[in-house]
Image 1: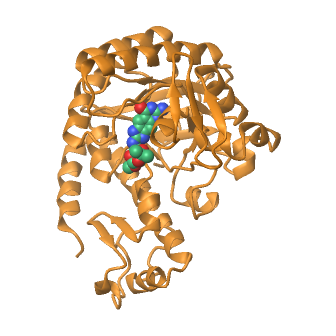
Image 2: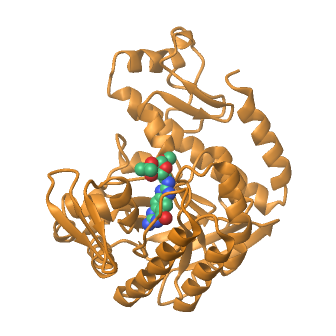
Image 3: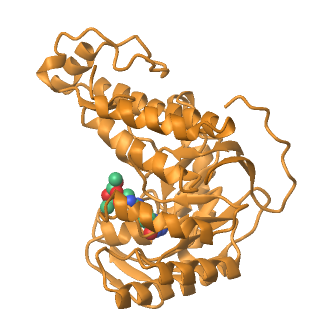
Length: 382
Ligand SMILES: CO[C@@H]1O[C@H](CNc2nc3cc4c(=O)[nH]c(N)nc4cc3[nH]2)[C@H]2OC(C)(C)O[C@@H]12
């Protein structure tokens, strides 16, 4: 958005300013040590210090303002100590903008083989070389400090769904004890921040207790965890309906791991401001294009001589320069350029969608835009 940037509020930590509200959807500005970013914002996933297959200049050209990195992956390789010696993530990956790093608990549970979870933290073996590692709220927070993360995530546990209320309760209560330990281990610096992560699965009473526990600790922002783990969109949205109002109105809300364009629209309309998801970049590597008319698989033979651009309003740097036929050829030939171009295209689409939604919040036309977007997504290729 080219709206004038409200002046930075001096603070000893990062801040978020709400600019406008339309229904439950908010438009605002995230002010950090590494620059200001308009919200709603979608964070491209840069797991091991790279948004796979494209340069950070290309990421910037899509309009992305903030990217995500992962404690779990970076602590294993190249290690946080080496990243620190290399000047931190920003310097190492040539990304001057803000970086949010996830705290590792989720990745251990969904990636690391052979792990043990105790009150102290998680012990696991590296999926790379089988070496043994231990993550605690303190060590995760320290690793994110060494990475020079602009936004540090509290160390939590994300329980697999479906789960009984007892399992969800015990897990949430531990995550809240870990949130307090994470906050105690955090080093406050002007323009930097730490987010707590609300847990509690799909149990309203547990989400309520979790949100209160985190507000009592006090963070610069609040993430909604424990979702996008296979519960489905309906259950995710119903959980958001009662969870976002439990969070401070004047601080950012980050829905972790979400999602498809339709997920983003629905979550923004339920009061969420920040998102990350591997989908647009992962899809770009597997020949799946995201467009305002839904998705299409470019390996499909019907594209072999289709000279049209991927989508008529593509504003990525490749706009109108490459035909579907060319991309079809690149993927059929297993050429590197295929995933590079399509990742760029998909991320540019996600950023264009964020800009469209933000503009609609600003002029209070989000309901109308939602109808148009959902209609067009259902059309499929034209
Ligand atoms: C579409 O991509 C798949 O969907 C998952 C994204 N869904 C997700 N939900 C999350 C929850 C949490 C959480 O509670 N806490 C912390 N700290 N981080 C989290 C990160 C999360 N990401 C990806 O995760 C797998 C690997 C299952 O496939 C991807």
